[in-house]
Amino acid sequence: MEATLSLAYQYIDSNEGLETMADRLTAEPTVAVDLEADSMYHFREKVCLIQMASASESFVIDPLRITDFSPLKPLLARPDIQKVFHGADYDIRSLYRDFGMEIHNLLDTELASRFLGITETGLEAVLMNRFHVRLDKKYQKKDWSQRPLPLEMLEYAAHDVLYLVPLAHRLEQELAQKNRLSWVAEECELLSRVRPANNDGAPLFMKFKGAGRMDSRSLAVLENLLQFRKQIAEKKDRPVFKVLGNKTLQAIAVSKPNTPKQLEKVDGLSGTQLGMYGKTIIELIHEALALPETDLPHYPRQPIESLPAALPRRLKALKEWRDKKAEALNIDPSIICNKALMYAITTINPINESALATVEGIKEWQKEAFGKDIIQCLKTLRGKKKKQPTGHENSVQPGLLPKAP
Image (cartoon, rainbow, N blue to C red; front, side):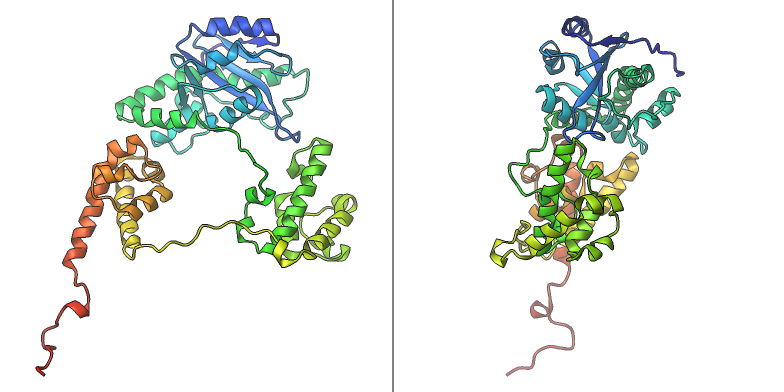
């Protein structure tokens, strides 16, 4: 199919316009949704555009000009209208964070593509494969909070939702042919419940990649630096990574430079950053180094459980089954059963479907499609174990009979 859809769209920048648009889309069975945000340019990111489209109409909504979103909330929450997103996780979190909007009856075309065995699931690749449509992504990292937005950026945004409704219909047909539509439906229902992360007063290092491998003294330095970076970013209204990068902070926390000369040797620190922040960074390091041992932070770790000796054998057997099944279905093995789920299954070692249902994280579609196979895989392994010698203490080798007393 060639690119034949019209790019004509309506720009919605008033409460009245939003109400009219919502009334019209309420009559549609399927509505496509996308958004643009400004996370690359501001400390607190926000939704700057919302794009929506039906099979016949397309809209670009300006949430920076609209003050009343009450017409849009019930539309997105209606269970009888399918909402189509591509890579929905970020969008769902953002819409809930900024407007309290909930998405019901979701179809994520990126997720659907993965369940069909498609390896390149970016929207650009999927539309090229399905409709021979080439998306121009040159505005992807632009500042969407600027006003007025250039016409080219508005057209770019409108184009992102133009083909989502026909794409959804085609992917659903293919999923139905492979009996995987219910799989994606359950995954999308779970995805629709994601919400923005809540820090709950926890240390900032808890969300810092690599912090779990640091000692307590390094964590103290890192936390001081993260708090400082956050204050500067908020004051300047800039993303935290544009103040000081994560790799730089990690290098400082591990090396703990004591003097300006030592700090200059840290990779990633520019001369400008050294001039603006160098003195404060050294002071924060000294402060962390002066903390008594009893006041040092600790990264919470799960206690090491005593694991069954047979667990590695079970994991290997289950992985071999999974990989063969994935190859037969032409699908990514992690979709059938990821590492965490395989670990949970083999730890419990279920002997029937009732026991399998108690495994944390297993989905209904996984139980229905693969439950019997999983149980049979583990059962076969138990059968092999029974046939093997249990050890010299319980067996006697020929020619080594014990002497009579």
